[in-house]
Structures are given as structure tokens and as C-alpha cells.
Length: 126
Ligand SMILES: [Zn+2]
Image 1 (cartoon, helix red, strand yellow):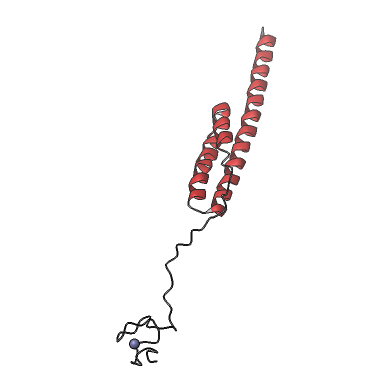
Image 2: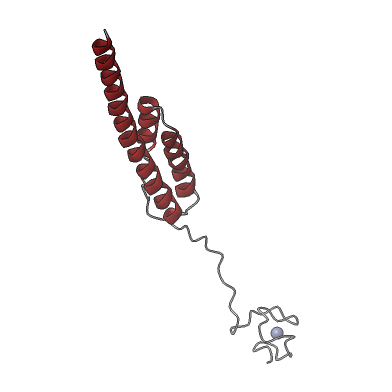
């Protein structure tokens, strides 16, 4: 391929400018450096952090801690653009948070029953 301006042979087919006359070669136009700002839609992934904290405070179960750990990951993953992972962490935070609350409620009921049985037994031993 030769330069269309001065007809000098070009060093390569993809030369953007002729080394002889400096003319721009039409076959390889210089791409304008346009910053394409990707306006990604704002993804809101619920972190269920409140659920994790409440379940931990109210139920005192390690499962609530697990929920908080996952909830804490959500915002970071969203900021990093990893929406799928954020949604997965959100789902786990919700799962462990609910499980913590449910088990906390169950254990509370069991504790009350045990105390009731103990009180009943103590009353009957008199
Ligand atoms: Zn030229």
C-alpha cells in the first residue's frame, strides 16, 4: 500500500500516518479518543444487614453473625459491579438472618418450656 498523498510505500498496512509526508491514511482512521462513560443503571441489592443485626442482638446466635458477614459483602460487590455476586450474598444474608430469627424463637420457646417443666417438677417435689 502506498500513501494516497505522496505515493510513498507505507511501512505497514495499518499505518495511520504516512512517514514521508505525514498525511493521514484513510484506511486506518485515527479513532477519536472519546471517553465512553458507561452510565450503568443503579442496582440496588438489599443487604439485609438490619435483619442480620437484629437476629444477632435478639437471638444471640452465631447464624446472625453469618448473616451480617454476607450483608457486609453486598455493598462492596455492588460497588465493584459484581451484581450477581451481590445478589447471591444478599440472598445468603436473608437466608441466614431468617434462619437465625427462627432458631432464636424456637430456642426461646424451648428454654421457656424447660423452665416451665423445671418449675413444675420443683413444685411437685415439695
Ligand atoms: Zn505520504
